[in-house]
Amino acid sequence: MAGNVSTPGATVVSRVLAVLYAFDNGHRRLGVSEVARRTGLPVPTVHRLLRELAAGEALTRGDDGRYVIGRRLWDVGRLAPEQTELQQVASPFLSDIHAATRATVHLAVRDGMEVLYLDRLSGRASVPVVSRPGSRLPLHATGVGKVLLAHAPEQLRDAYLAADLRKPTVHTITRPDRLRRQLAAVRREGHATTEDEMTLGACSIAVPITRTAPSGPEVVAALGIVVPTLKRERTRLLTALHVAAQGIARSLP
Image (cartoon, rainbow, N blue to C red; front, side, top):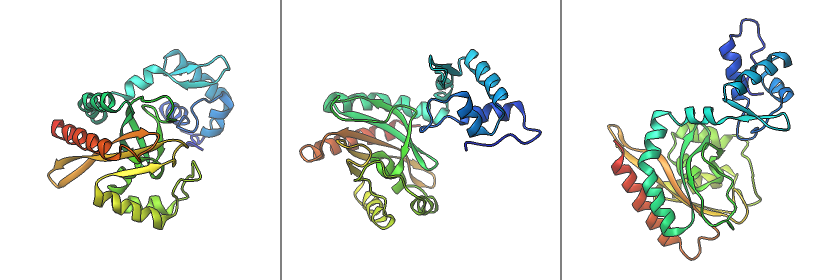
C-alpha cells in the first residue's frame, strides 16, 4: 500500500499527496478503486480528488477511465534544482556520445533504493530499453544503477543487498555475495556492465560522474550506454563515457 491516510484528522494536503504517491514505476495507470486500495481512502474521496487533479492537469484521465501522471506535474518535478542543473550541464555531453555511438545514452541518479533516470537519448531501435526520463528501475539490474549502488553509503548498500531483490530476467544477479564482489570491482575498475540483466537483448556499460566536494570525491550521478553487445566496442564506448563524465564533472558548479 502506497500510504494509508484514512485515519481521522488527515489533512486535505496529505490526502492529495497520498493519491499522487499511489503512482509509481509499477503502477503508472490507476483507476479509482485501485487508488482507493493503495491509499486507504474512501472511494468517493478518491473520485473527487482525482477529478480535481485532472482538472488542474496534474493527472490525465484516459479513455478507459484510468489516470496517469499529467504533463504539468512532470514539468514541476523537473524544476528540482539539483536534477535540473545536472541535466542542463550534461545535455551536450549526452548528445556528443549519442552522435558518436548511435546508442541509447542514460543520465541517472540514485533516489533511495532505486535508480532514477533524468535523461535518455534513444539509440538503435533493435535494442530493447525499458527506461525513460522520470522512470525508476532496480539498482542491481542496470549499469548506471550498479555504479550508484557501488558508491552508495555502506549502510545503505548493506540494507539493499539484504532485501529481497527483483529478478527481471534469468540473468539478473541477485545473490548478495556475488553482487558484493561485483560492486567492489566497479569501485576498483571505475565502471559497471550488465548483460541481459534488465531486459533480454540489452547490455550496458556505465561510469560515475564524480564531483570534488569539501569532504572528498562525491559520485553525483552515473552515465551509461545501452547496446546489443559489449564484445566488439567495449573499449571505445568506455572511453567515450569517461571523457563525457569528466567533462560533466568539470562543468558542474
